[in-house]
Image 1 (cartoon, rainbow, N blue to C red):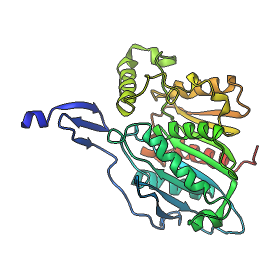
Image 2 (cartoon, rainbow, N blue to C red):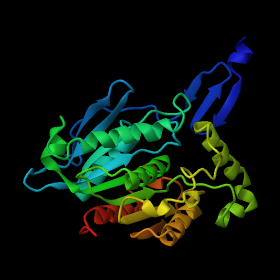
Image 3 (cartoon, one colour):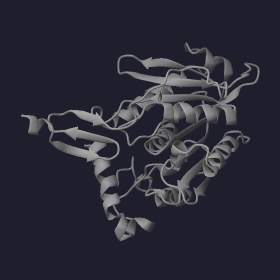
Image 4 (cartoon, rainbow, N blue to C red):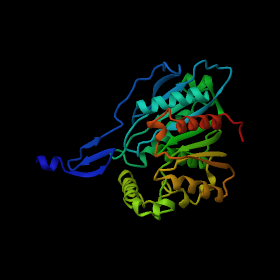
Length: 320
């Protein structure tokens, strides 16, 4: 019995193990911190329950000296973690979003979606959509959340996310393109090391040293999305989506890291988006010598600070 209990049937290091008896062990990303006033930035945060029936919530961030007479851009942010770890309430994202709010002077709603494997895809997408509908319910002065009603300019809404969260942000922008919310204008999308992939390797993915890494990404996708058609699923490989031109915003900023496995997918995303007929502008910023989500692991390094500054600039450009 003991050996059966401890038998591992799925393992994606350093994130998660699943045992034969169904037990799920998350190896990282379990910590949470309470909402508060951050002593370093004076950014305020608070938590809201969006849908108690399914367990979807969010953490809201408000910059210091916010003035209801000067409405601010809104960022709806989706956290990363391979769809299997982390939350909107983790210290990693608490620290990052405090810094982003302080630097860019924006309001942030960080949506907390349910995780695989207990809640396989497309549940994370559906939960994120529930979060967006909740945000949209405040456009005409309705809704219960005063921070959204009092401080947000709903003509300057952005989506953002890192890794798996970048994937979610893209797919939410795709859905916005076909299911527009009355009163919300999605101006832009910023994707940090987005988890995009595909069946056929491209760029450095073709190198022998990347074979095991490619298998890891392929298998992780099938693990979190058992009903998928594979790595060319349009949710994972935007190039296979015939409706890519309907992406529901006018500006896209993609961040990639030189040593990251998914770097070439970020550049490829720019290429296929530009060729799709989408009427917008897409840019890519590459951090030399860095790896996946380095800005979360080393937030004060030169490249992380440059990224933060670039995101802030992106969020404060005049509408296109």
